[in-house]
Image (tube, rainbow, N blue to C red; front, top):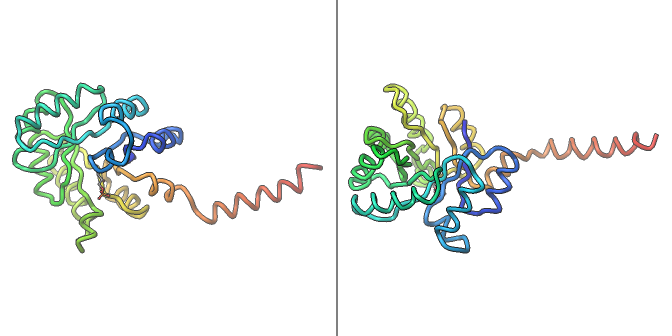
Length: 215
Ligand code: E4P
């Protein structure tokens, strides 16, 4: 499974890249708003640091405007993927952009049917937001699982990005259902790495080695 970082924070992205585990990045207006600097500077710098897909969200609401905005985003760097919310105008834009080989990540997906429509319109990625479904008392992972199954049933090329991940178990579950990608906040990435028994084990080995190294 590929791991994307769900952040626009360059420090976190650089750190993840040094770990050798970052296959791509997803941003959104909320994540960008937390960072200093202009939108374009932030995106260009992320695209310099990460060679994989970097999702950049469109905020226009009419298809013709979304198309113009997406073309402009796509010029920022070769690895830009334009993020478009699932909706009527978004589908129209996706259909046009996919024929121009501009990759689309269909975002704010909360149902299998939304994912199916986006895939048929030619989107490259669909992003079910499992955490936000969980917040509403639904089983977000079940929706992601069904989307994976449906896309596999028809051998569609669209890849599933499990998004709105809240904790490490979400990542494990995304891998178990065979999702192509999980997009993970840096805080969750750190939690995936750590285990108290590992820390205890390292500490003991270092202390025992102190007894040996003077011999
Ligand atoms: C995905 O592309 C989104 O940026 C993200 O996963 C949204 O997650 P949230 O529900 O934590 O805002």
